[in-house]
View 1 (cartoon, rainbow, N blue to C red):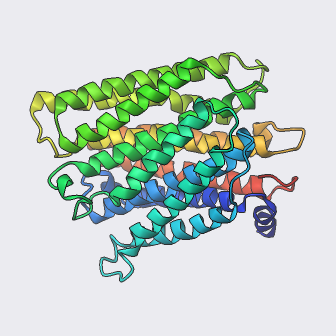
View 2: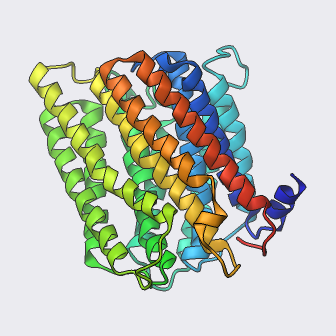
View 3: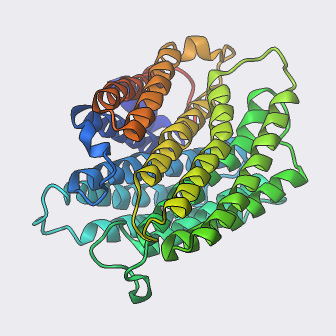
Length: 416
């Protein structure tokens, strides 16, 4: 334990490591909750338990992982020292305090500090936006990877303005009686998580194999088309025209296909063809799942149009789509980035992941199996299958957390 504490203290960006550890702990907690209560994934997001789980997986894991990964990647992969490391700690204080409140509120509705939760998280997000924007300003020659990160800041600002999803009151009167909570999920999952994974993959995949980061027109096309689809999908999900939503999803699919093709080119052009890295393979697999998630969403839209569902009423297939995007893309993609940054940060000669993270392969196998079972179980309303999948997700989450903590506690040189 003391080795772990000393490693965090000696790190040049200890605040970023604390965000990463928070994300992994929240991931384990979220998976334990659904392992104990698989009915929470039944698709009724209005239930307080389901809301607590959504908040834990998005605010606790997702946003914490994004904050930690971006703060570590800028100095490691982009060569940009953070504008202020003190702001990382200030951001962490706001975010962790707000996270605790928003997760407890569904279970303790009379909590006096309840209104403070969203405000604390929003304040932390604004600190992060300022810090990262001023850091990116120092980049001599911006590329598509840095543009993806800048786009994350835009969507984060929009999400912060909208507040918590499924709230009793809409943030604006014009959003009353709309599907703005579904639009909020689109901005978080597709806008923040997918852009973070895509942008950092453009840098981390070449660096992992000794290659220079690629500057291609395809990456810029992917950035523009993917985020055009995100913006339009937010409007379509919020206001409900199915035909417009179908068109937006097709645009988003086109952007994800270009992004996936560009990442595959990075893998083929590695400077060390014989090199293998599990975290990079997981990252590549996560980028491959993005267009598949778009196809699942298209299927859901087609079903909505065929059966004439209410414009703003969430269907079970909508919930399956969100679960698939979270469990098959966002979580493994961000986990892969976390571990690949650990590999790049290491200064020792031997950097073989097989010896660095011996528990990572079985943890990912358990996680992948759990994802398949949970998505299938929720889709088919099979509670026993969902429960088994949730238990495997929890096992995989423990493996990720223990692998990361073991690597931090292992003696090595100071790292960012």
